[in-house]
Length: 70
Image (cartoon, rainbow, N blue to C red):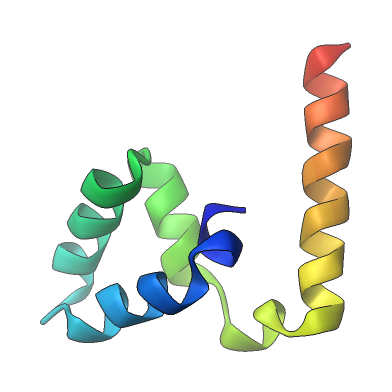
């Protein structure tokens, strides 16, 4: 959800990083992410951010959040 809400900034941060390790570190610092979360963002394929996939991610987020509350 962080990547979706800040898509342009996340893409710019990744593109401007000289390597994956730097991108990971910057994501973790900027968005207060764990290494696992930063890796998940780096592993996302851009096609997953298209409208249809975006809806699936949002739905999955709501389901996981509801499960955690239970």
